[in-house]
Length: 143
Image (cartoon, rainbow, N blue to C red; front, side):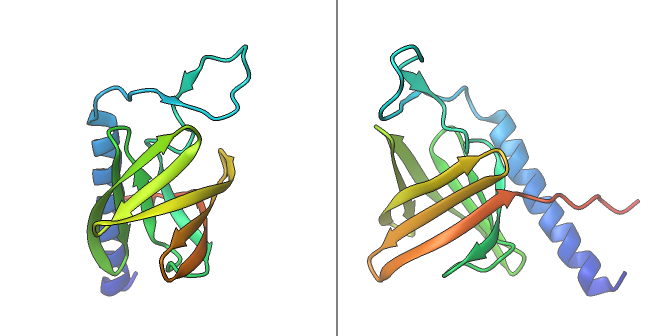
């Protein structure tokens, strides 16, 4: 394996490890209300995208390979193979997701959520972008 490729893999594995460690060490999540929840279901549940590391697979404005983690304490962590981690915030209230990056708040539509896919439409001031996220691939650490 080339030295550059190995360094990139190690940096990515380190970023994923930090994200997972932060998610594992965070306090128990506060529950959030879900819009149009069936009456038989508990009125408050944790959204299915929380405390998981997601990787951009396809997007109209975000580089593939960028990692997102929505931590249960409301912290948003974003990192890519070419940048250091950036921290923001997120809220999910009454079925509405809002993300805050660099002090800019965006309303975000959840187009699809399953264990294999999180599809978002971020309504940015400059126009909306779509992001297809999949569970992050974790590269094994070298021996």
